[in-house]
Amino acid sequence: MHVMRSRLFYTDQYLSVQATVREFLNAQSEFLSPRSLRSTRAVGDAVQDVVSEHFETLVGSICSECSKEFARRAMADVAFTDPDGLYYVVDVKTH
Image (cartoon, rainbow, N blue to C red; front, side, top):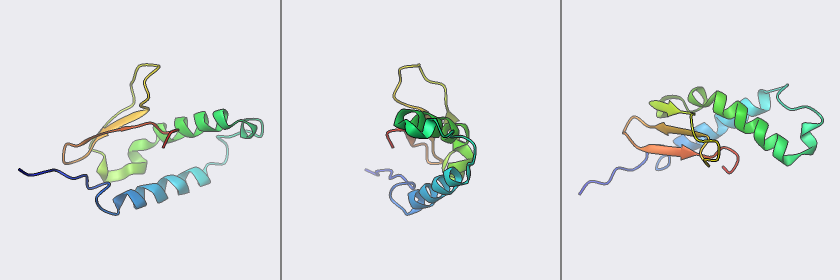
């Protein structure tokens, strides 16, 4: 029996994605206002919005198909399939 392992998590590729997301967020100058910085919920919502909006670019070639359409109360913000057909569901704020 052959077990498929995620190239994202069973290699160092997740570190590259992590660094790309961190650099991207640090380069955003106007997605948080001074008022929203006082609220962890507002910051979480803003980070979720900007990461979800740019998700495919941020994760690069590990993403072969991406979905951002979920029910309002769903935990997932983004889901994607990698080139090997593995399916990932991401809750941006929790991560």
